[in-house]
Image (cartoon, rainbow, N blue to C red; front, side):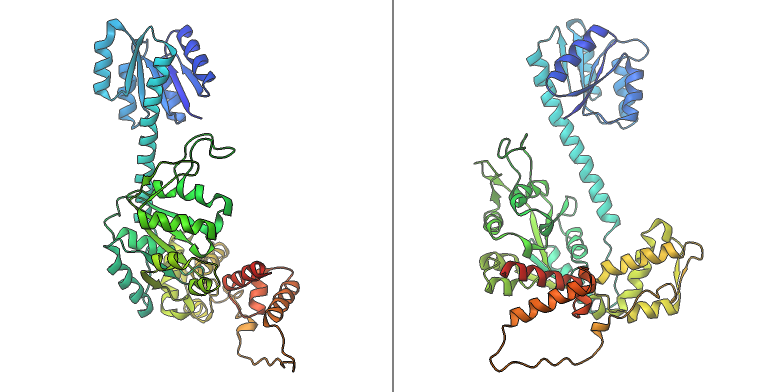
Amino acid sequence: MADLLIVDDEDKMRTLLSMMLERKGFRVDQAGHGRQALELLEKKEYNLVISDIKMPEMDGKALIRAMRRQKILTPVIFITAFATIDSAVEMMQEGASDYVTKPFDESRILLTIERAMTLSRLIAENQEMKEAIARTSQTHDLIFKSREMEGVVALAQNVASVDTAVLILGESGTGKEVVANHIHRQSPRKDNRFVAVNCAAISSNLVESELFGYEKGAFTGAAARTRGKFEFAGGGTLFLDEIGDLPLESQGKLLRALQEKRFQRVGGNEEIPVDVRVICATNRNLEQMVAQNKFRQDLFYRINVFPIMIPPLRARKEDIVPLAEYIMTTFSFGQGHTLTEGACQKLREYTWPGNVRELANVLERCLILTRDTGQITADTLSFLQVPEARQTRTVTIQLPAGGIPLQQVQMSLVQQALQASGNNQSTAARLLGLSRSKFRVLLKNMEEDS
């Protein structure tokens, strides 16, 4: 529902327009002259301004000039009498979207509003894209010192300039989206959007409408045509994270979109061409999923043209302290904080099952604890403990003479771990010597097999 502002010194005209537009579902505010309208525009964002030209205190000309000086980009339609068409044309030159002459009929003004609203949407999307690009250029920096990450970055640099399909592999929290974003920023598409989609976070029955959009009336609640992520990322990069969690029934449509570079919205028949680079990522073993008929083989070959494996944080300990120092600067209350040598040593010794994401969470906690001192010490990190299950020890299980179903043993151990941990998945994972992400994958596979 759009917000409109009507500006006219005639009460009768404002009331007539408001009633007409509110019947059509618009939210309408009113102002009696330009100065009052400008005050409202400074407090609230409107999709469209409909204004008379001749008004006391501040007329329409002064209003649109003041709006442009203050960088208020809301489209403006002027209502004018036949005698002042020249003024309306002058206002078009000042930046007005359109004008309507008095007397006007309802169909004429609604058509004019519809055209102006299209412009309003384009302005909003353009502004959003500029802000997103600005945010992208200021964040997602690759911080590393290790040789392992040097290799990752070299691969990313090599593939950035071409539209080859990239599959980024690695445990949860290793920074797969950061690498995908780096590829985008080094590519010819860098001035367009980078759109990230977490396939695991979308309900299975909404995946297709999320990716490809839908037509009005396609399903209950589809009140208007809506673009999907493929269209939204047009000209840029679409990052499909956790691609292994994409439902089988949706994988065929994704494959077709990638192969033919066109798709159909849900509930539509029109073939829509798409110009977008797709980068996928997963923490799952897709080859194993293909063997188990849980992932399409043809889609796997399509997205696995250029694989990049990101090593876990425990395998690149040289990166831990530089990453920690960078992460601290991203928090407003972390400016000026330092790490003692003891703290650095403790960070390097920890196994980081949650990788960089866990490191960020730990540092946020430490920064809060040390706001007064500004220094993180080994004592501050005393809550970091090496999980007992990760310590070296030998476990021997005697195989019965008649054998035993391995799946049942696995299920029993998982259930016991969950029971012992009070259904806390992180604790249960540690009891089994697994990272939380691997435990979740194990649990999901067991649920699917049961």
